[in-house]
Image (cartoon, rainbow, N blue to C red; front, top):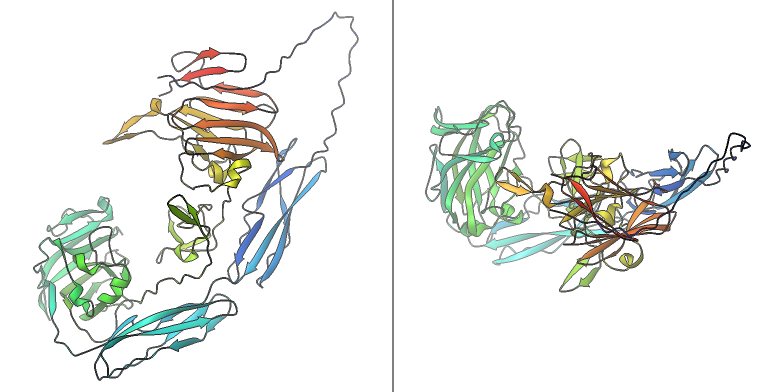
Length: 603
């Protein structure tokens, strides 16, 4: 299939003539002096807001010179720990002694309110006429450290009702509060719902004993003792104290695997909202640390909940309040796992499990940590866009991270993918994300820019520097795909790369490390360190503008659904290169005064 490229450009005709041997020798012209300073490009915004009390990481800058190419950048100034405005100055010099400077302003401010942590449960049940004992709360601030907590509200234990207590903490700049609900109720008889007894699942948990295993792609093994799960196994054993109980063994491979009891039909557990899931554990081998959860039909879940203490070789009752799991996201009306549990380190651990049940009442302390929902402690502005709206701010409490050959941040808006560190136990990043402010000019700068459009990342990242894959900007106007660089763009036809992969099919965009881009490469011979911006965009097209020192050098307009790219060159000479000579993979199908049509079919 053929995919044309329409290029609008200007050409320059070069000619020369010569004479005989007797012609005088013309001395070589003296090179023009280099009076142009390097161009410094800041990584990130020129003005950064930094949270006081956290470590500032300078995103840095790069510099390019018209003669020397890439040159070193030095930085002077520092960012202090006190609230205020700081200036960093970046300098770069070329071999001719030309020096350029660029400044960044860093505003340090305390914008995050203290974190209030309840002592005890967020939902407390008190029987009518009994005494309510306040467990209290603590508060910690990133700048002020420990701060006082003021409690407001009261509980009348002589009257059946629900009472809300407020816990407020204030630092020098912000305040936040959380609440605890105390239900005063009449005494009720305890009822229960069994899940596991004497090593066997109990109705209504008819799907029996199961496990998931990382070693098999997190697939399940069902009612087979773990025969299909290399990372975990289970069996009924005779315990000297309990008789028949279930014993669970983790393999020494370290594969993450967990045991669960399941029902084929979701179970309504709302009658146990004021109660708890209780079960007994006994450690045979390992450190005695365990993680559990309940599910309510994927993707609904309580989330992973760690037991807050190590279980030793004695039978220990674990208490998990249902109200706490509900607050963490569990839908009590459709619980489909009676328990999901695994050893937190899951490496050769061995433990016994017995007497798993839901009870309508419970006494004693919770065995899992109280998860306090993040406070809404940032200001934001909503802007109407069609029938919806968008926010100009993301709450830092939503930031999450993973470790995979590096620390990667997500749910943080349009930012650089890397972050200083990641607490994998909580999924919370350590350090501030580096914003990628939109690379937009002209019309595009006057309208909202969505993060996930068909024209990809060019509006936020700008362009990829040839030889550096870390800032690859892609545009995918099917039926072609293009990669934007600091010299121009490279493009190929999508259908020619359409293939079957296993049971699926699709096309693979060449990875950023692939310097050979099958198809067509467009560049400007006069410039090799351009900055790319989105200058206009719509649902159907996007126009990229390449600049040097704020001067437009050329434009390219990509139209979704079209094989044509429209290029305007304002300065320099346009160059077009292909991987092959004319033949079965590439050819010219149209030529005109200012137009050139190229087709490619590169498999």
